[in-house]
Figure 1 (cartoon, rainbow, N blue to C red):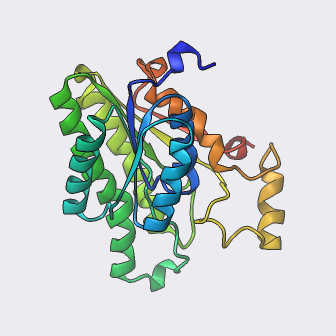
Figure 2 (cartoon, one colour):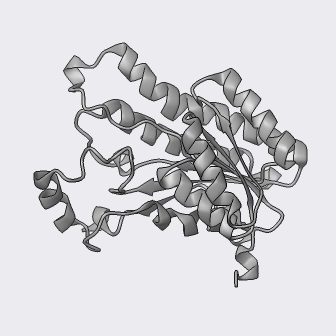
Amino acid sequence: MTHSTFDLTGKVALVTGGNGGIGLGMAEELAKSGADVCIWGQNEAKNKAAVEKLKSYGRQAVAFKCDVSDENQVEESFTRSVETLGKVDACFANAGVGRLGTPFHKMDLSEWRQVFGINMEGVFFTFRAAVGHMLEQGQGGSLVVTSSLSANYGMPAGEHYAATKAGVLSIIRALAVEYARHGIRANAILPGWIETDMTAPLFGIEKFEKNVIPRIPQRRWGIPADFGPIAVYFASDASAYHSGDAVVIDGGYSCF
């Protein structure tokens, strides 16, 4: 039985990039805890499969195809989300693109802008829509962004990715201060090495695994389900006084 503090019955959560990986791990646990869930993703087949899985927990679930780097698509998708589920209490800006592996001295502007368009401007568009809605509702809300350990540590051939993941931490701190008086809190989650479609090319590389696994005290890769509980916490009333923070979930990697 869900403890009443973490009971999300009556709440609506929006998860961008929620059709797979960390986003779906969050969405599943949110639904299990009683929330109605809306996910955004660009792959319609994955959207459909994710919605069916979420509905199996007895909650309302919908998905909209949305490229978060497109301002108009974000505005339209947010409007449709509210029209369908009535409101948004917790907004998880999780959609992102990973490192593309281009050496910095060979990186072109189009690649740089692609990463910034999704990872930085996508967060701006999403949270801007969410804050406006939450202010109009007058009931506060929770904003959560998926950052990365690369925000704090050097990431070769991923300077654009790291810059965006560091940048969203500053956005979170500013939002936490600016909108606290309206009952809106803002926090970030920093994943470590998590096994998802985005990181799949790295896993299975023997040299990589031999270098990384010994540095993870728990001696395993993270999985999407590891992010469900923190999502529930930030969407619930249990986090009512928790804002402006960056929570690391990495199996102890960054402190070892």
